[in-house]
Amino acid sequence: MKKLNTLVIFLWLISVICFNSAKSWSKAVAENMLSADNFINIIDRTGTPKQFKEYDNYHNQKFNPLFDLGAWHGFLLPEQPEDYASFTGPMVIAQEYSLFIAKKLDQVSIEDVISKRKYLFSEAKNERFSKMGSLIQRYAFDDLTIDLTLIFISNRTALIKTNIFNKATIDKKLKLTWQGELLKQWQGQKTIKQVFSNWEVHTEIDSDAIVFHFPKVRDTWNLMLDEQAQYKIQRSVPTKTRLNINRTAYESLANITVQANHNYEIYSTQSFFHNQQEALKEQTKIVMALVNGNNLIKQGQARWSSYLTQALANIDKSRQRLAVKSIETLMGNWRSAAGEIKHDIVSPSVTARWFNGAWAWDSGSMLMH
Image (cartoon, rainbow, N blue to C red):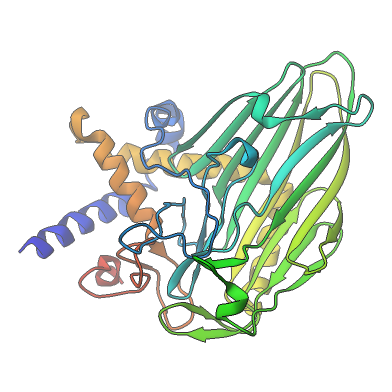
């Protein structure tokens, strides 16, 4: 009976969100964008992963990344000053198993080319928070403000907007550096190379992209990757990139000029693909996102506001935070079709071991197909 009640509640939430969201889209934009600001950090999205299996005492992943739109990878907010200006992780779902592949795979740093000043994010006035469907970081210096916003734009790609506002009365020439490195530690004292002897990541770079190609691994209960599984970072600005000797760490450089009292926007995408076919299919979306990023962010915010409008329509104020947490949890457990999963599903959990799959008694969305 308890299982049945849970399923009934789940089906009600999904039906409210999915069937009514479209007709209230414009109303949500007009009336509820501000309301979404009332639901900050409903789920703790902070974390610093240091190994693939960053387990808690129950042997589940102890950090809870943001996932959306059925994506198979998710992100955290930095909790340590040394990780500011990055979205920590990512976590990827390697077909069945949630694993972190990096502590921070894409961290930006900024230096004034003329004065040689390095902007230390740890010294800036800052705020870092999660809001329905997005992760946000804001850093304020005396002459610059830097905002980073992450939102998912598809079931394979997240978009990061880096907005730099020059508060000074003169133009600023800035050197931007992005850097990141794949994790080496598997769990405890064991490295991933010790666990999987064939673990060799092949990394490709060009003027605006970095692609990490993972080896094929078929290890039940631990890691499942097909040949050509890959993780891709692409930017809206050209960069010069160099790799370390093991080709598991990178540094990308770009020079920009920000006019006085103006904004400069840079867009980056981060995508996880199970195979090359998925990568090829997604490329057009990525290219469009890099030139139309701001509109996509607005669309994503409107989508989540629409969810909020419908879900809270008849909910007592004392239960609104619980309702929002339910929506965020269900959306995070949404997985898009991939491999033998032919339709979108809702898995029981992202962070619990062995629960990234579809079962009729847990994945209520299957009853709706």
